[in-house]
Image (cartoon, rainbow, N blue to C red):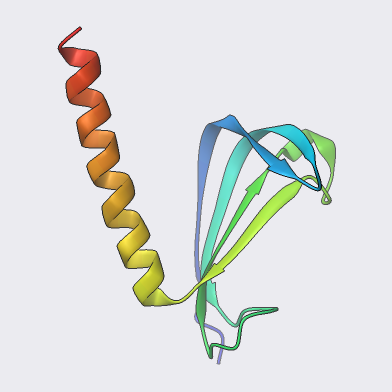
Length: 88
């Protein structure tokens, strides 16, 4: 059964795939059946450059537990970076 859990965020950054760097402008997030992982469901994140076509993407398929750990670590790094920037 599909979950229909989908979200999207505008982002600004760059990523590396296939030995090439590319600009990224959107993150697509879904919790559904993965294409390559051996999980019933996975949190899938596609970082894309919307203007460069379907092949311009970096894809992740994470277990729910791995996604929770990653979100927590990113949140803590952002809090520390914000404190650093605010203290400059």
